[in-house]
Image (cartoon, rainbow over all chains, first blue to last red; front, side):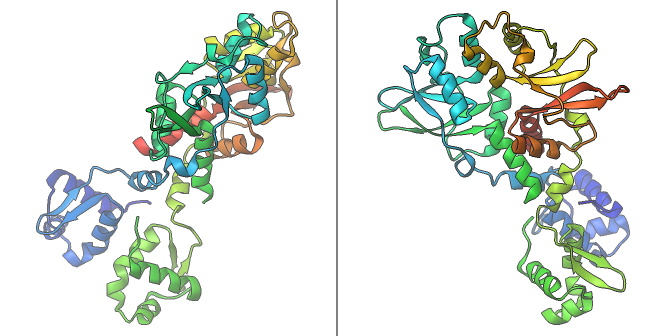
Length: 207
Length: 207
């Protein structure tokens, strides 16, 4: 959306002098209120300006990307998460690597015998384990995992954009989506990964 | 950007009866041309409708996300690529895994003695190598890489959105950005990864 020169002037006037009525904006531009009406309609509809009865127009502080961020707010984790790849804590590193290939997963989510979610194990954790030189056929995956609650997790009602932000900030490739169980333990019900984000990004363009 | 009921009616009229003049749209809605002016201005500015002199309004076939896709078209690979992590083809798998950790990389790009780009090696390739059971201290990385030209690569003038699309379609986590050398070989000058895409996605919201 390209703004006209006059629309940019209006934004400047409201930015520096707002709140300000439509009549006063028109005066400053030496135009009639009627002439400005389409411009003001566009600027308020697109979120650049806000209008309040008996107060006037004021600058919303929102950039060109307000539309973008409104759109992004519609993406909620529960609509985009994938099924988690879940394994037991006593699985060997070797079997965990096999599972990574069989399930084409980046990260494994680990549970105990009560099906409580207790940790995550990434490809990097498995690589580290396999280079230490111990026998990957006997070493259990639980030795190499990051443990709850010292890891990043989210609930299904969070925004996808927040999940993306957390993956960058915490430097992880995937985030487990959890639900609290009655016993105060957690159940893992999904995952959001950088692949999920890449798919959403592509869909923004293709939709 | 939420369209009003009247704006949606106008889009319907133009969709089914376009090209159509502003006067004819006004007639159909039993309104004056002046009343419609702000609506038509909004609809053309935001890309829903196009207007041609002496022809009238017609439906652009563009969805609500036109603005979004226009925005995404501004992201070009050369402005967003990261430096590639480049290693020689005779590096051992063990040293390659160490490099993955030292450089915090997901994928290594492999060159020969002439600095020609000859292949890529992912974390998954290294995991596969380390589970085969051969000695990772002597096995060279070149045994485990995907070789040029049988892999996905892009040049720096492509769109970031296209790189994202290719990562999903080809199921890779990272794409080498290459430049053709005078001898018809390739130089690797950067990488775009799902991490890059996740960062761009977050920046769409934060900007």
